[in-house]
Image (cartoon, rainbow, N blue to C red; front, side, top):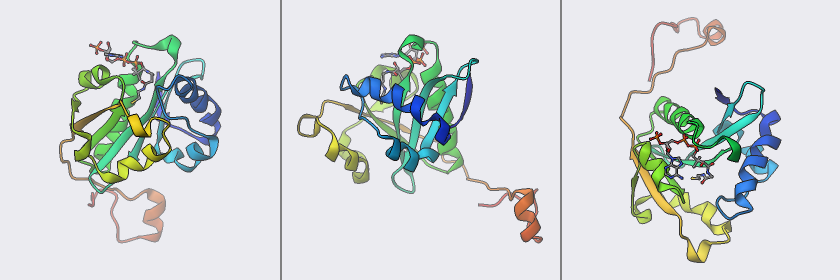
Length: 178
Ligand SMILES: CC(C)(COP(=O)(O)OP(=O)(O)OC[C@H]1O[C@@H](n2cnc3c(N)ncnc32)[C@H](O)[C@@H]1OP(=O)(O)O)[C@@H](O)C(=O)NCCC(=O)NCCS
């Protein structure tokens, strides 16, 4: 299974996965415009035949916290570790950004518990996380469970690319920066 950032070409398969579950009320539906706008949030798991077998997104809400969302695995490929790999890839990305807190709204707290997330009072989550709830059909009677995982605070480092070094001659590729 290859884990990589999504591209615009993945959008039809990403939507097929998410909206299959959304039609059963398990996830929020997404449109091609929404996914395109947030394409940098998305990671896909691609099987050997090139098909998208899993998807997930890391949506940053505050300087410290991000939501793991739009997480979906091909119904025919569940419980093979794909969901875990997608979330772990999103966690690596969160660490690279220096985020210290991840959360999700979910009907599968048992899955997130396996990955180190604990149930949390949703009132403790950033208010920005609620903006998507406004368009949710279950807004008045939400039964999703909020889960949270603190991330180890690691110093975010940035190394200039060789291309950038051409315009920043004083920068050194071997010198990590904050
Ligand atoms: C939830 C979902 C992403 C899990 O993906 P998956 O690839 O089947 O999960 P994995 O195989 O990586 O499972 C990782 C661990 O979680 C456990 N697990 C998986 N689904 C679980 C569930 N529904 N309840 C409890 N534990 C679960 C697995 O047994 C495994 O445990 P192990 O490490 O002890 O073997 C997938 O079932 C899915 O797409 N569900 C529908 C959409 C959805 O609910 N998305 C979440 C929105 S927040």
